[in-house]
Image 1: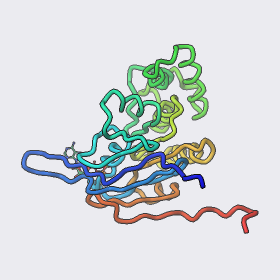
Image 2: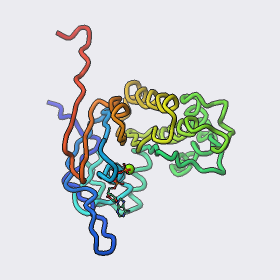
Image 3: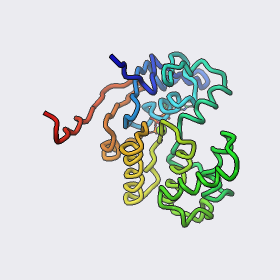
Image 4: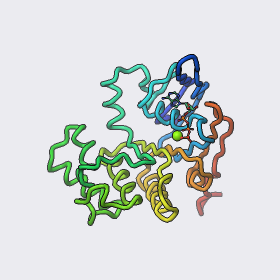
Length: 240
Ligand SMILES: Nc1ncnc2c1ncn2[C@@H]1O[C@H](COP(=O)(O)OP(=O)(O)OP(=O)(O)O)[C@@H](O)[C@H]1O
Ligand SMILES: [Mg+2]
């Protein structure tokens, strides 16, 4: 029997923030398995620990205790350099506030993560143009972020996240700063990445209709998973 492998595994994650005498339990014992090609949404009220969980899963933050594995490799114990290397090639990030670099053009923003991976300039350019074409922005590649609409900025951010061909895309409120039409377009792109390119998606949102795009929703409250919902698999025509 072939065992299905998790792309991400979290075991008993705890994240404590200590501010003065105050201790905040941002994560309080999270266990989570994410399978390759999953589309997972993390929901919960403000302050419930969604961003902290995403940051710990994607190795941006270290847990206080507990373990994170990427493909059965324990990453929570790695040093910063190893962690940055694994993160850089495995995970693409999309943020609510886009996090583009203002003095770089769209193309240069998309080229940047490829530079960190040591890819030569010609290849960086070819890939960046290809990625921008995929999100319908080839005509905007020489624009700087302040010359783009919110939806266009988020599409550049998605192109940048995809540049290194990561297996996992993590997105923290990717439609949070967008009007509903631009938000819908971003959700379509994310859905396409999951369905056609088989990318694993982990998306944080506090909006139900956004989470509905995912195939599984987990609900956080006070740093704990309090509920999980799975969408039934669509039956194929020949299934009997
Ligand atoms: N750097 C920090 N230092 C101290 N406390 C923090 C820090 N970051 C987050 N917290 C606290 O940890 C808890 C979880 O925060 P987190 O940002 O993960 O929530 P969230 O679910 O993403 O909320 P939102 O929907 O508002 O983005 C909150 O109580 C928050 O105040
Ligand atoms: Mg948050």
